[in-house]
Amino acid sequence: MKRVAAIDIGTNTILMVIAECTAESVFHFLHEEHSIARLGNKVDSNHTILPDSIERVEEILQKYTATARKFNVNEIVACGTSVFRDAANREEVVEYFYQKFGISIRILSGDEEGRLTYIGALIGWWNSNNDDVAVIDIGGGSTELSFGKGLNYIGSASINIGAVRITERILKSSPPSPSAIEEAIYEINNHLLQLPSLSAKTKFVGVAGTLTTLASYVQKLRSFEKEKVHKFLLTREQVENSFQELKRLSLVELHQIQSINPKRADIIVAGILVLQQIMEKYNISKILVSTQGLRYGIAYEALKS
Image (tube, rainbow, N blue to C red; front, side, top):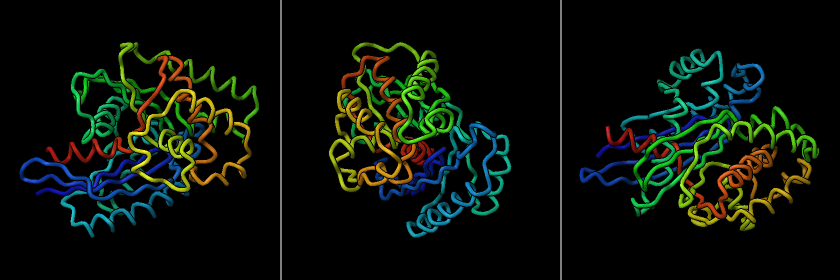
């Protein structure tokens, strides 16, 4: 039996899942951790990962590696996404964490991120290989659209737009001004032109913080409840209504909503706006929320090797 800890180091969040594979090639996901570090703070403007951002990640990785040891993992596998692709000092940061924790961070291309996210989002619960499926991953710095046939991945597209990037560039205040919202929509739609056409029969699955937060918010959950969020069917009307409600609130008011993580409050409106424009582009009436994603794909690939 092999056991791994898979860590997804993103622009906004750092996620870990511990998984194992039995001799019969049965996969089990044993433990998860979620932290918001905002590693990508100001990377969009200065292309540098800042020292205080590195410190926040260091604290989280210290905790994650201790947890991994308690679970007696054979290997810790870590991957970096958009923030590393954008940062000029990425090699220094990767080397720093290697010296500190002995972890080699693999910087994923947009295509690799899309492939692993697709696999990770669906593994363990998607039962049909006949469906056209697209997985939407709205990150902090980039957004990936991955597509395939059931569990069989076909391709993906990555665009340099995400909740942190849109917030830092345009939606700089809460509530944002109507003109800022218009500018953000224009910017988002310019990037969406890079995404491919999809079959009208495509079924959509959404992963990452914007989607899981929306599923919690719509259900008025007091805290994150995986069993109520995973596979929740989010409608276009619910997305639009949530945007109309949240875009009017100050940051203080957003912090008071129990279903929104306080560290995500300042970027949730931008994330919903990206989702809203994607749903409009593809005429999506409903989207299934998956609490899985990239880290699951990383773990699956590591266990298969």
